[in-house]
Image (cartoon, rainbow, N blue to C red):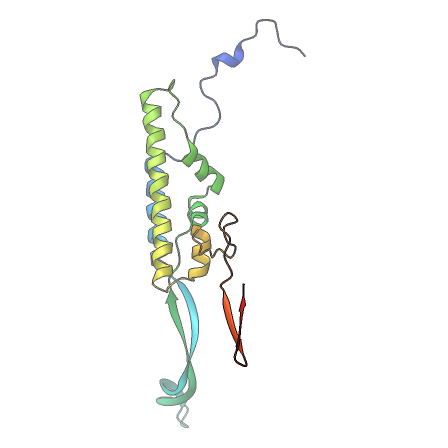
Length: 195
């Protein structure tokens, strides 16, 4: 079925695409909730600590007269298991999971461009999104860097994640080749010079 000639229904729509899930303020609020959740919920590593230790427990035991009495029981253990809290890093992926958005949505918030034809209110919202997304990234990167620098996080993984690298140039400059140093070899009182 073809549309009528002169059909301009597409021009009367009030907006293009669906609404964004977050405003800049709600996105920042959600990020702060995520950061607090990460701090309140560190990763737990179970470690075994060697060394004998004695545990004392009170327990009901039969007294032989049809009743029970409380008795202290001692148990000696050869080691102890302890849960040690470990730093949980802030991550963009973790934040997006917490906010229930995909990473691409966050990146779209970062890439928003100011449309000169849009209202001042819409332009301000775009500026606010750019400010908020930069702040979120900066906080995430800073926490990861500080965690790696202080030894709480694996520095190799964090360096790759942050795009940091240590390059060693193994080739010389083709326009300025490295010269081979002149060597002097002394063999039985004769001197040979090599280049």
